[in-house]
Length: 389
Ligand SMILES: *Cc1c(COP(=O)(O)O)cnc(C)c1O
Image: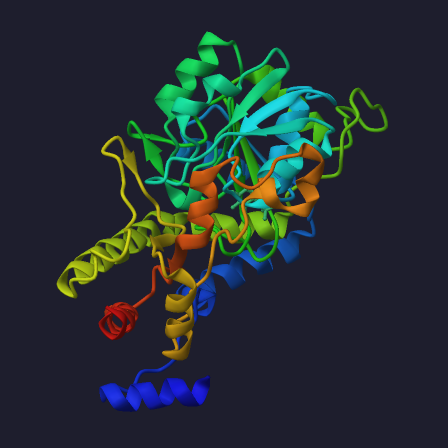
């Protein structure tokens, strides 16, 4: 495969260094000194679990996300779990969500013995199709959980209206969408609770696992604060059945450094996305490829830049041979995963999610991606279609 990639480069007369799908080293090089100083400070303090660094990060993120409460926890998956626990989700309850997402969205529902009720997606935004939510509501429905997939907010106005009509809380899975806006407000704030992830590949990524829950309701926030420390408000007294899910001070210190750079990185991602859009037009391949579209009431933060192709697998293989890294998010929708077989869904239940899973292809979009690298991506895609059409 590498030899073939070299051959192709020789053919096109261009010699390019290989690059990765997500280059975290490039980001680290930019903030190295700041990060090392922050880590050093934590080591000097020897306070590792919650504490002043986590308090400071929570204050900064509460302001950044324009919500009343922001609470750190051990991961994005735990953020969802804690949000559902705070709402006292019980076995037999139902939560409406999308089948086209990372496993943790529905997995957290199922882990509490509740049932994920899937609703198909809008093929343009890849987010839950809000027009189809109402038909999925039953007497057992306890919450609606939209996901802001790839960094683009779901149809929150419509979802909020449906939720209000049926008196249901909305939990936003904003793991991929920190800083994304809907009606000019940051996501994680329009629902009852918002869940964020600091997994290293997210737009605000730590040096390991981490997560955050946002809330505007003081009672819910208080419950989450207790639930993340074993259900305890005062030492060795347990009010609720909680868990151990806290954010480390080391993560918080690093995330505080990165938060200062986040808007700049987001703008770089958005600029890269615009450049892809231009290049796809210039190379006249936008007719073969479905490009991301952003409704006017939202801003996209491009955790992923996802295109669609009817020949996705062949295209992906061609790109791999040309040294272009790509990923598929997600190759199998959750309703067809063995882990959710007990829900008794079958192929054909959510046709838009199923088609998307066969057609989507994520291209490199990280902030430090260069113009030359983007040109090489689009050239390689053009090469595929020149040869095929
Ligand atoms: C990453 C992610 C999560 C889980 O976050 P972790 O921090 O990895 O546990 C949940 N939902 C979505 C949509 C994600 O992308």
